[in-house]
Amino acid sequence: MAKPKFAAVVITYKTKQLVDDCLDSMIKDAQSANLEYEIVVVDNASGDGTVEMIKTKYPKVHLIANTENRGLTKALNQGIGAAIKFAEYIFVSNSDVKILPGTLKIMLDFLDEHPNFDGTLGPLFNPDMTRQMMKTHIWSLRRPNFEQQFKAEMVGTTFSLIRAAVFRRIGGYDENYYFWNEDLDWAERAKRGGCSFMYLPNAGVIHYVSRGKYRSIVTQELYRSNIYYFKKFYGNWAWLVLLALKAEINYKKRQLQKELKTAPVAEKEAIATSIEDLNISYRNMVQEYHHGRAPASPIWEEK
Image (cartoon, rainbow, N blue to C red):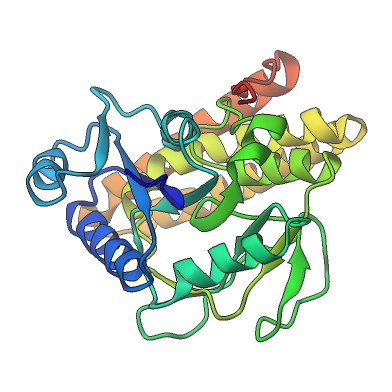
């Protein structure tokens, strides 16, 4: 059996139809370019028929079916840990993307031809093919020209191609992030490790943005993730960031409390839940600041 050209790592949670479309587009694009490939899907205990659908429709896919929702970051590391054993290149992908024709080969060819680059990323499009906002640099006020190639600092977890050797050198995603800032943290480490990435304008995907179901957990984890990131990389500024985030949470709570007083009965429960999510977020953030955790990024041995 030929060695796969790449391994794709796809993470899914309650996105049965989306992951079906994602895998279909990925396989068709790989086969049209005669690429040897493997696909690793990590399902975070969806319970919506995703696992059964993949086993039936995509029997060659390497499926990791978690019995609990382990969060995005741990699932990513599970998938990478499996793919890194046999792949030179690893596509990291959400389940809510559809690969546009030619994308896989464009990315792979670029890294084949440019050994000094460690990974590639491309544009994200809405279903109507309008361009989505995306972060390509850790800190920058300049907006890049997305119609041209440019050196980037961030290869996010929505869809990107990264050399397996880079994951061995930099490590996996920090598992202290449940669902936010894991890509920013990894990009920071990669930048400090001397990695280079290229944005390719012709290597795009459609991104359906399926985060609605995560709204509550995102709110609860967002501010803790932010303060953890700043303590880890910019410790001298963490106190100032804490003050700013406290002010932001308190402002959002006041606005919601005003809404709650006049909201229709049918909306009151959702608003009250949002307020409680902010309370939990505040407590999580303060705990993180005063009792921070040690970094938790897996390291895979060199071949």
